[in-house]
Every structure is written in C-alpha cells, then in structure tokens.
Image (cartoon, rainbow, N blue to C red; front, top):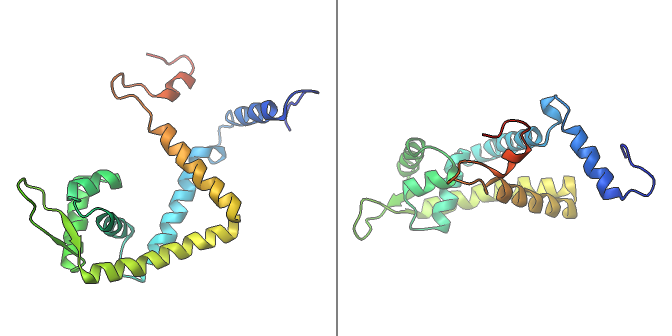
Length: 182
C-alpha cells in the first residue's frame, strides 16, 4: 500500500493510493481508457464472431432489440443504440433487404414497428450463440465471482455517469474539476 500510516484503515489508504494514481498523465493508466480498450476489444471479438452469421454488431444489436420489443421503431433503435437515426435507417434497410425483419403498419402515426421474420429469428439465435461463447470465455478468464463483480461494477458506472443534470447542464463530476466551475 502506498502511504498507509500505522493504524490507518486499509480502505482509506486504498482510496488515497487510487486517487494518487489519477495524477498519472499517461492515458493508458486511467480507468476510462481501460474501459474504452476493453470495449474496443470486445467489439472486435464480437464483430469477428458475428461475421460467421453474416451480421455486423449494430445489425445484431438491432435484431436483439426488435426481438425484445415488437413496438420498436427505427428512431427507438437509434436512441437505444447510441447511433444517429440516419445510421439506423441504413441498418434497418439492410436487415429488411436480408429478409430478417419486416415492418408492420401500426394504428395511426408515421412509425412502422418492426418484427423479426422466421429467418431473422434463426440468424439471431445463431448470432446469440456466438456472443454467449465470448462471454463464456470471459467467465473462464476472470472466474465466476470476478465476472459477476465486473458486471455489477459496470452497471454502477453506467448508472453513475448517466446521472448528469440536463436542466443546469452540469454533471456530478464537474465538482471534481479544480478551478473550472462556471
């Protein structure tokens, strides 16, 4: 432990050591960079695995969301996928051309909810097996308890970072930026 005084609780020393590490200017030393690298690595693994099914990762995610919500519109998918509506329009058009989804008229309005076709359900099931295989590998690498801890921690990080205020246009972490409060 760095800087732990006699009688000082381990948790306090651990926190101080972690906070001291945040002063490291190398990008690769920081949690947000590690999260980005892990995301990029997992995306590359998923892209490679899904290629066996003839899908891209965005197409796979769109199919999975349509399966769980049969009232999904293209705009809904874009919001949930963190991509632009224009990009989602292209993804949806390709899934329709591949005969994996079909649009169904809804009662009123301009929205056309989508449904998986039988072929779409079959392709999605196959793609899900590939995605689960990657997760099973991660469980083997980390061990079940660390896997569960990581999953729970990532959920907490996501919740915490989504708490930013839209009314005041400040975020909870703004208080941690020294001498730059507006």
